[in-house]
Amino acid sequence: MERRHLHAVSDDVPRVSRHEPDATAAQSLDDLLAASGRGSAQAFEGVYSAMATPVYRLALRIVRDPGMAEDIAQEALVEAWRKAPEFQPGRGSAKTWMLTIAHRRAVDRVRREQRQRQQMETEAAVAEREATPADQDTVVEVDFRRWQSERVRGALDTLTDIQREAIELAYYGGCTQTEVAAQLGVPLGTTKTRIRDGMKRLRDALEEG
Amino acid sequence: MDLHEMVGAYALHALDDDDARRFEEHLAHCDECQAELASLEGALDALAEPGDDESAVAPVSLHASVFDEIAHTTQVSAPEPTTAPDSPAEPASLDAARASAARRPRRLGPRLLVAAAGLLAVVAVGVGFFASGADERALADEAERVRTADDSIEYALGLGAATLHVSQAEGGVALIGDTPDLPDGETYQVWVVPADGSAPVPGPVLGDGELALAWITELDGAAAVAISVEPEGGSETPTEVVTAVEL
Ligand SMILES: [Zn+2]
Image (cartoon, rainbow over all chains, first blue to last red; front, side):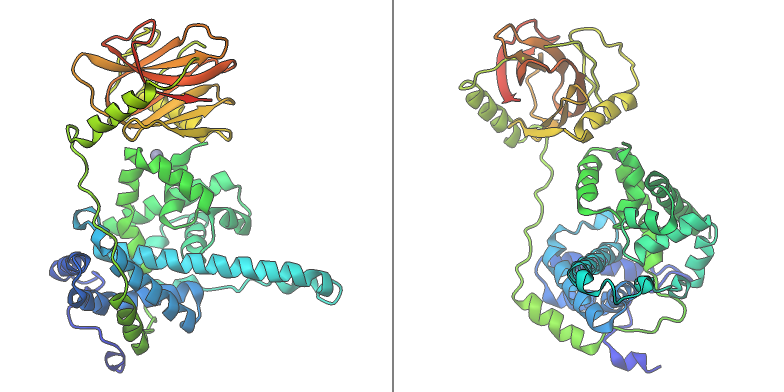
């Protein structure tokens, strides 16, 4: 496949554990990140080859713009290098740790852009109010399901619609719980509970599957 | 306000900055939320898992931009190993608290309700209105209620990692965090110092170490909340005030 030529993913990329959990690869990613935390740029090459694409893909799903996603991936990977000394292998996997950083960065970007857009819209509003039809802020409907592997889709299908939609809007849409509540037309308190229950149910479904 | 409810949204980065900050303060001393958050790791990884038709790969240019940048990026320093209970750091801060307390005036007024929680060294209550075996959860919640009240103010105590939270609306104070070790036979005690110069009102007695404690008490006319070191069981008047905050 041509993707092999496009980037530097080495053969010890920890794979999604659908077929067989590759404990050695996962272990070595933890070790590589820990070694990066002791200042080894060479170890970080290994981290990069395992995580650059997962980080980039995650950013791309959330910001949906390749240039911006590359930007975020760069920020996230540099942040991972900078904070690697804080990574504690006993307290979670390197993969989760890095994806958390990338997700946070992407969500922050979405919110920042949103704030800027709102500000500009407010400034423009006075001038444009009469000229513009009211249905301008159409929400782009995204089919989140194509971003999910079969395994994850199956697990998400065990959730109630509200639980699943709330989680998808938050995780892929970068929405705050308040925005999720507004979009779903559900009270905030209920939204919190749906998200929390949904995540627990997702966890359990994945463990069973 | 139930902060536990936000653990899922927190894991998904779906809290705004204010909520995230409040939740993190809660998380720091909530074992339940820490455990729940850790248990969600697999689910979070799964959401990040690439979809079946997802073929995007990191652009080649990303490699150079990352490695150019890290070449001149200083790494953070590794976190200190968690301090052992008898490490020099904490006695030092108790000494420091004792020293600075000598220079401060104090006062405070009250009925009591006390909470001690968690892992937490529960706390003999000197003044005795507090049935032993009370529900620790309810007690921790009480502290949490004070801490998260809209008008709650946080005060650094200069006493280990403990902070004092005061809410006029909830009519109480909460003491949360880690207090320095005490010699055997000694205990901390909380006091409300009245502004009218009358005697400090004795509050709950607490042990050292990790704690979360609420004292629902009359704060009208209170000038300060003080913490003293007392002989085991507490006292009717403060023996050695180690820190006080003016309200
Ligand atoms: Zn909690």
